[in-house]
Structure formats: structure tokens, C-alpha cells
Length: 311
Image 1 (tube, rainbow, N blue to C red):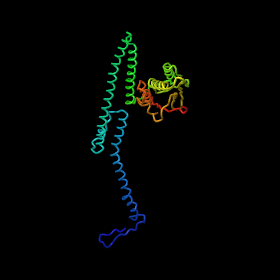
Image 2 (cartoon, rainbow, N blue to C red; image 1 turned 135 degrees about the vertical axis):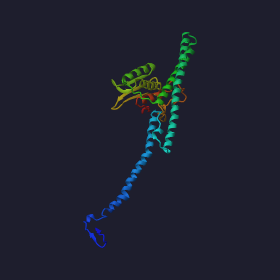
Image 3 (cartoon, helix red, strand yellow; image 1 turned 90 degrees about the vertical axis):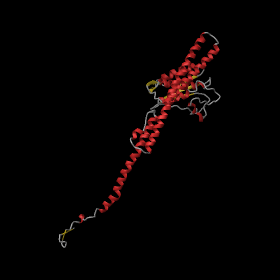
Image 4 (cartoon, one colour; image 1 turned 45 degrees about the vertical axis):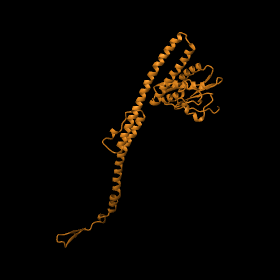
């Protein structure tokens, strides 16, 4: 290391150790400045850019999930602040779509409620008029026919409204604890009274406690399924009802002796108004299995149909 004096002809020389020679860390410094530091800056910039793009997309995702779960008032644009780019335009479009669909759904709900009121009122008046006519014994056969049709219309209206509510709202009806054996006993007794010429064989435990369920929803579902099984079973045969318990769930198996269902229709029989035999007229059972499927789904259960191996 040279230190020159003022005259310029004389210098003061110092010999330093080799470890203090300038430039020994230059390679590391160059690698740091040319590669490592730019990579750190690039990673930081990428992270900021990612946050700038993904934050509104995450808001859109959460809003979409909330909207699909029934929160019709969810909006996104106000959550994005003052940004003005393509993503904010997308948020505006989503808000407009959500507002429009929300208005349609609310209007549909109101229409169903109004329809329920408007249909029940004349049906009630019709029932009262029929009762008055029945007491006078005038045209009794025709009156009985009108009564049957009135009851069928009433059941179709009630089932339609219930099906629309279960389909649109997708409620969770897990409210109470029930004993499946007691519930099945009541349903089976009613079914046996309605179909006295057909046998019902049961294989049930002494008790089966089911928590977080609904007595009404499950009872109606089982009633529809068992009635459907008895309806399609011939007079000289019957149905078999088995209740099994596993670690995490109960399984109720209802086996009939009907003609069976083509494999491609096994899922369609749970659709409203679907009939395998197109020649059969639509009746009060048009919603039976469709209602049962949605009622069971509302208590966090599932139902499926399959043909028996031996017929």
C-alpha cells in the first residue's frame, strides 16, 4: 500500500498481510450484486404483483361462495377500494349479476308465497262447499269424485310448494334427536293400515338413536318411500324393511317386489313428475320420491335406488 508525500518524489510503503489485499471478495460481491440482489428484488416485485392481482380474485371467490350458499346481498366492488382496472370492472359485472339474480330469486320466493295463499283459500272454500253438499246427500257419487280430485289438487299444491322450498332454500333441518325404530314403527303401522292386503317384514333393533335430525322431514320421507314400495309390490308379496347401524351412520334398506326400474332411470325416479311408465297418469305420488330425496338431504342423509340381484 503506497502513501505519496507532498513532494511527489517520495512515497511511504506499507506491506499488508495477504488477507487484507483489496479485491479478494470481489467475486462474491459481483455475484451478490449481479444475481442474488436482482433475484431478491424480482421476488419482492413478483410477490407485490401477485398480491395486487390475487387479492380481488380472492374477494370474488369468497363472494361467489357466499352467494351460492344463499347470501344474496354479497357485493365485491366496494371491497376493492379505489382501484380502477379490469378486475374492478369484473367486480362491477359480478355485482350487477348478483343484484339481478337476487331480485329474481326474491321475486320467485314471493311468487311462491303468494301462490300458496291464493291456492289454499279457494281450495278451503271448495272443501266447505263439498261438506255442505254431502250433508244434503245430493248427487253423492259426483260429490265424492269432486272430493277426491280436490284432495289430490291440495296434495299436489302442498307438495309443489314444499319441493320448491327444499330445492331453492336447501335448508338444514337437523333440530332434534329421534329414535329411528319408534319412527319406523309408526310409519309402518300407517302403511299397513293403508295396504292391508300386502305384508311388511321388518328387521329392526330395539332402538336406534339418531341425533341432529328432524322427526317430521324423515317421517314424511320414509312414508313416501314405503308407500311407493307397497304400491308397486304385487298383492301376494310384500316388502322388507331392515335397519342397520354402523360406526358413523344408520342404513335403512327398503326392498320391494315390484317390476324394477331400468338402470338408466334409477336416478331419474327422484325427479318431480318422472314416470317410468309414461302411460300412467300423473297423480298425487308425482312428488313422493323427489320430496323424500330433498327431505333426507336436509337432515344430512342420502338416498339411492338399485335393482335387487334376485329380481
